[in-house]
Amino acid sequence: MPRGQKSKLRAREKRRQARAETQGLEVAKSTGAAAGKPSSSVFGDRPENLPAAGTPSTPEAPEGATSGATAAGSGTNPSKNINSPKAGSASSPKGTESSLSEILNNKVVLLVQFLLQKYQKKEPIRKADMLKFVIKQYKNHFNEILKRASDHMELAFGVDLKEVDPTRHCYALVNKLDLTYDSALNEDEHMPKTGILMIVLGVIFMRGNCAPEEAIWEVLNMMGVYADRKHFIYGDPKKVLTEDLVQLKYLEYRQVANSEPPRYEFLWGPRAHAEASKMKVLKFLAKVHDTVPTAFPSWYEEALRDEEERARARAAARAHTAALASVRSRAIASTSSQAN
Image 1 (cartoon, rainbow, N blue to C red):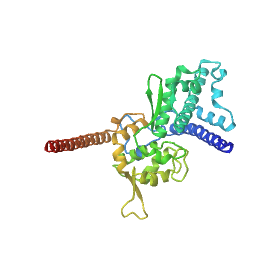
Image 2 (image 1 turned 30 degrees about the vertical axis):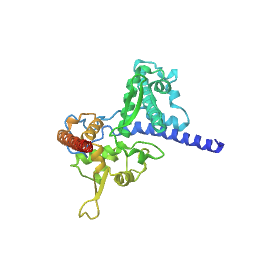
Image 3 (image 1 turned 120 degrees about the vertical axis):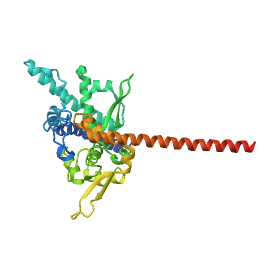
Image 4 (image 1 turned 60 degrees about the horizontal axis):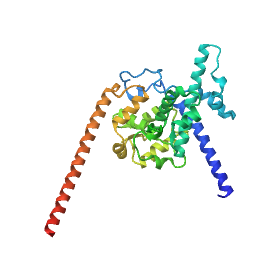
């Protein structure tokens, strides 16, 4: 390979790694920043069992995110700091507990970075690698660190971390809604944008299946996503919502009838109806609020009705397919008997 091409590949890899590190820190902070934000003004009355405003409802933002960002900005490696023998030392039990908490928070940030890099490079995610390169001497806390990092990935990107090979302990990041649009949207950065779509679909659902644009941005603003600002995950959020997802038919964006000046509203697009479901979206929103779908009684009932309708439609489609197959087989049998 020519030397110039090798240099370009190395530079591209460094940019990719830098992006993953920045995104890992920002994901940890942004998913935590959304915790405790009141949503009743947008979604309607606060559902039963939903944490009141000010109560953390998403995974707690790692306290180490700030220190990690500072270390990255100063050119130091946060993983070196938290894995040093002195990192866990303290002069009192209280100090030891506080120090361990900060270390584990930093480990969550580092694991998010690790998962992002693996996702971008399309490399397998192995428990052995996570232990070797991220967890290190804190193996006893692996399950806790993995759970918190998984929650951050789910809330920020809409992907689930699933164990695909229990024998070798291999994991994969799976699109939460089994949508097909990701490859069309992500291009060079390969960052899943399912998270923002699920939030928007949820607002539309909870607003009676049609949401004014201002209601969408009110919710997204709580997450640090603004129409006029470039976002570290979603790029140009307004373009993603009003152009990309509309062209891909996951959202419908239309002007409110007789509105002057013009106002706009969002609805589910045909592909959202086909590939997502109200129950899946409701389960995601329930997790954001650290509760269960039944905490939203009216929406849960609507989601159940939607599931029943989908089940009937699938059963009808299977019956139709079976009937066609039966007719075809009889026709073939009849043609064969006549030939004989």
